[in-house]
Length: 276
Image 1 (tube, one colour):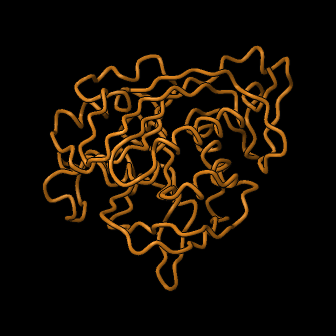
Image 2: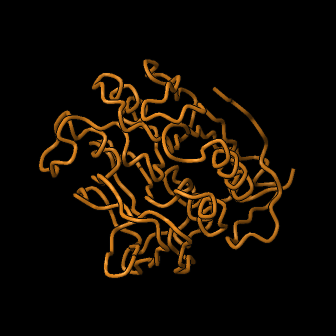
C-alpha cells in the first residue's frame, strides 16, 4: 500500500481556466481525496501519480493513495474488510480493476462510505469491478447483484477493440462539468458497452467508434441520499490519462461531486488552483 500527501502545487498553462484569489484559497480547507488503484490490465503504478499530480495542480485538493501493484482481478487492496477506509475523506476516486472481488459483504464494505454520504468519482475499470452472479443480466430492479451498478449509474460488461474515440459533450445536459469543455478525439481507447443506463444517471457525453456510440461521461445520484457520483469509462491508456483535457474533466467531476463548482464550470472561491 502506498499512501502519500502533498500540498496543492502551482499550475500554469492548463487548458482549464481554474483560478482563485490567494486570500480565498488560503481560507479554504483543501478537499481531502482518496484515490484507489490496483488490479488487472492497467499501468496503475504510473496512472496513480498522473492523476494525483493532475488533480492537485488544478484544484485546491490533496490526494492520498491506496495502491497495490498486484495485476490480478482480485487485488488485495487493504480497504477490503475495512468499511471505515474512507473516514475523514471528502471524496473517494475508484480507479481499481477488481472484476473477481465478488463477496457481497466485501462489496457492501466498499460501498459503505458512499451509502453514508461520501461522494465518489468512478473511472474506467471501476465499471467492471465487484461483479456478482448474473452480472451481465440487464438491470431491472435493485437487488444484491446490482448494488455496485446502483452506485455507478451504469451497467457495463465489456468493450471492443482499442481505437480512437470521438467524444461529444451534450449541450442539453447543461452541466457545470461540461461548461467550456470542447469535443475531442482520444488516442486508442476502449469504448465500454452500456447494458443499462440507470434512471438516476444523467448523460454528459457520448463516445463514438465508427457507428458504435455509447455514453462515456455522466453523473449519478446514488441512493435515497442522492449522493453525487461522477463517472467516465475513459482512461485505459497512459496517453489518455495524462491528456490535459482528460485531467480537466476529472478535476471538474471532483468539484461537482463535492459541490465546489459554480454554474459556469469554475471552482467556487477557495477551490481553484493556488500557489504555495
